[in-house]
Image 1 (cartoon, one colour):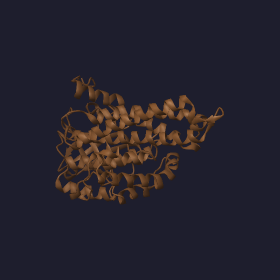
Image 2 (spheres, helix red, strand yellow):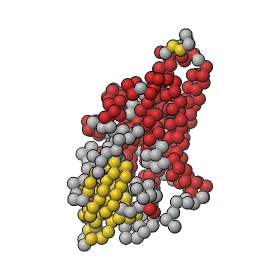
Image 3 (tube, helix red, strand yellow):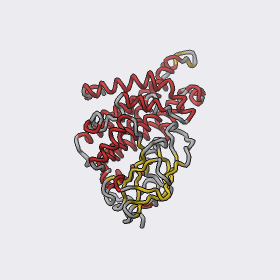
Length: 385
């Protein structure tokens, strides 16, 4: 992949690779076991510039492109796919939403603090009544004097320990036009993180339901146009989808590298395992899929960086790479035999994380529907009618 990376991108890749190997890998199994990521990990990412990589320089970030962000996420996911997924939200999605929707004052208020790690942000959209389909959502923002009131529930909100929550909500008008975004501080009355879920994969991300009961929202915390915010952040969503695809690619590569080392060391039936033709055949096929996924991902990020939004490359990458990662990590885990299903080896978390990523940030089925609509012209059948 190095052949098309710039010098700055290679430098950031090397920094991320060193951090992943030397600092994150030694605690990755503990994060998975405890369902908790130590706070110093995020703080360290801020020190290394990862949190601000996608934030413009004018607001305290590095002003790098999506390709750079995905290169970082891919490397970190080789050690901890779960933390890489969490980092993707903090690196790409949340600052991207503020950068597109926010006023100059809001950008100055939220983005420098996000880049430094002082104000960790979370994004909240999924609801019990309609998953990611906004037409069925119930969380609503209503006018109240000089401000607003927010009421409703959200599911599966990642980074439950955030200080600021970017909440997508219905407004006075029903339908897709009438879906806005507000920034909610966790200290405000009526806001509640209800619990953290115990998950199959993507563990340590503090994911759970949150509730809003007459939460007062001042006008200065409304981001963008309340009637068009959902449509306005479409480019950010596509970028975020590619960020999560990068974490799935790194997840697959991480287990692939461990498995190659394992089959070189283990003997089976009286000879080194790597010399068995079924093993070499499977490893060769998986390596080819890794390279295919890499080519797809970075074609998508380069198109995005060049401003080409004509194809839903984020959804294409998210659906294909996440599905491929689960298929291949399952096959790789099989090579480990009984050792693979023992938590002490720390390898089955890659397969579990790959499975979780087929649902997180939009299910495969949701992304297929987006692809069919944007690329083939088939309307999504999930409507409120």
